[in-house]
Amino acid sequence: MKITDLDTPAVLIDLDKLEQNIQRMAAFAKAQGIDLRPHIKTHKIPQIAFMQLRAGAVGITCQKLGEAEVMAAAGIDDILITYNIVGEHKLHRLAQLKRLANVCTVVDSEEVMAPLAARMQQEGLQHEVMIEINTGLNRCGVLPEEPVLALVQRLQQYPSLKLRGIFTHEGHVYNFPHLEERESAVMKAANDMKRTAQLLREQGFPCEVISVGSTPSAMIIGKSAGITELRPGNYVFYDRVQLKLGSCTEEQIAASVLATVISRLAPDRAIIDAGNKTMCTDNAADFDKTIGMVVDYPELTFNYSSEEHGRITSQAGNIDLKVGDRVRLIPNHACGMMNMHDEVYGIRGDTVEAVWKVAARGKIR
Ligand SMILES: Cc1ncc(COP(=O)(O)O)c(C=O)c1O
Image (tube, rainbow, N blue to C red; front, side):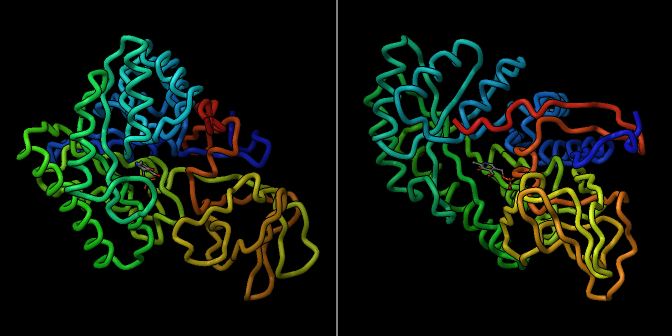
């Protein structure tokens, strides 16, 4: 099948670029002597997770239990879920999942830890946990050093739980468009993590794993001696936000959306069949109000979308596209875009080589 045979809108994954992105990060981690545990929330596709494992990843990271269930059912057996598991429904599912795969979860408070420990005890299971540390994102996570030590001390009263280590998602680096600011936020996060691990070790608590991760920080924080695990996710595809941050070049972006021009009623306006439900309007770094980038047409701006319509405009006047023409769009945020699609097409040149079900899409529980 050729790309021209596909109906639109359709997500295209450039397989050469995908493979290169996977290899590059794997080679970087290997050169640093650091474990790579990629976050699969970007692609949500077991086949891509297996490509990452074959390239050397030690396991995968999932955000939601539902994503982990999909990956475990596909045969992946080393999974870190970087999300507090709260509530009876999920504790039950976690216990089931642990019979299928080696699953580690995270905690950032006694309120999360106590029911988890009780459930594991009741099920006769031993469970490894990581403590989440807030290094600046101000989402989940205890503050570094003493608060972490206090939580680890509390952990000792639960025989069903074992400490694997500490982790952070230094996602606040997305807020720093300038490299120097980003580097200093990344180094602060690395130092917070290392100081905390040192304190735990001094107090007699083994802290085997110091896990960090985001795509814009990966190749900076990964060079910081003492960090043991990297969890970037977006790097498999990259996107417009990563391009703006300088995490990648335009040539390295592997995911795009193929769309068709459906209306041309003004010289400076083209309407395409890709809107919010195709592109995802998430714009992590909030650089501007555009929805994405039009490949090969740098003069065009994709500046409005409703559910099923996208509007491309040109400041220069005439747009050289007619109804029925096709364009390729780079999404602002590839992870959100993937969640909108049932399947994606793996391409090489103009040939469609693979059709992948986005098996873990919509797994919000
Ligand atoms: C806990 C955690 N780890 C790793 C990542 C991967 O970061 P990125 O999407 O920048 O690659 C994320 C992304 O949201 C995350 O939440």
